[in-house]
Length: 354
Image 1: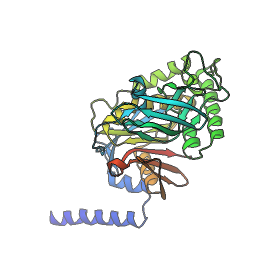
Image 2: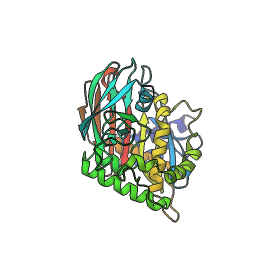
Image 3: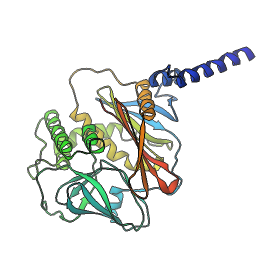
Image 4: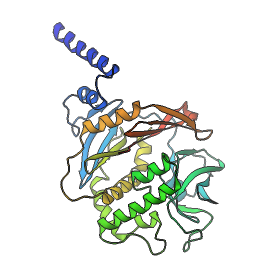
């Protein structure tokens, strides 16, 4: 027994040395450390996380991420919650790439990059994660227009404020145009591409006659909603009863796309319906004829590992939020930190660039 224990220990030491010397790639290292456990059973390890899945409907596959909560304070309100409860107002500033936000409540509000706010003089997409503290006063917030041409009120909507935030950016190209390229022109181009793909795959134009360029009105299209419903019904409950699920990774057509992981199970579950809806829209836009090879747990492990080890840079978004960005040729990783909680991370977003 002692000899056997020594062999196992030596194997672990040799594995650690090979990883530290760069002799194993991220995927190889995680594959070996995970052993042979199936992802849907007891799960496979991916660094500090455990993965279960895939849970698949048509061309969309979800891997759940299990881990420990790092947020020690009370949970955040989401932007949509705060708008519905009238605890936050998002104001039009008449600047395409900047809005202002004010929190009237006694609770922290988490605003996620990619959140779409509807109304104003043009629908906008939030450009950066932000924590809006209690009784904040007006704070500036980066934004990108996801509607081209309109610069006036629409129907009964108030032109000075934004009415809701029920949806999020639907494709990784739109997210990358805002978060990486910070290019309004690229955002508009990516919105047009997304609308064209959705139109092709639902069998009719999704552009609204009220505002043909609006991404928000396109995702509200009846055919798009009906098609997305099958994805949502099939996948919405996969995290139910699992209090250690803090995020997920998704793949479309067998290719790993992106991941969102949060500092608590509570925050993840609040955001999950909006996230899944956006993923369903992207899956519809990318729907292809023919079979594809499903993504594996090893693909996901390598993606997370490689994203986190890329060269990084930090910047302060405001007095409350610090943003760490890591990027290499294949992936980009964003980590939002709360300086009030000793830089505890609140949100990690991983995007496969290619």
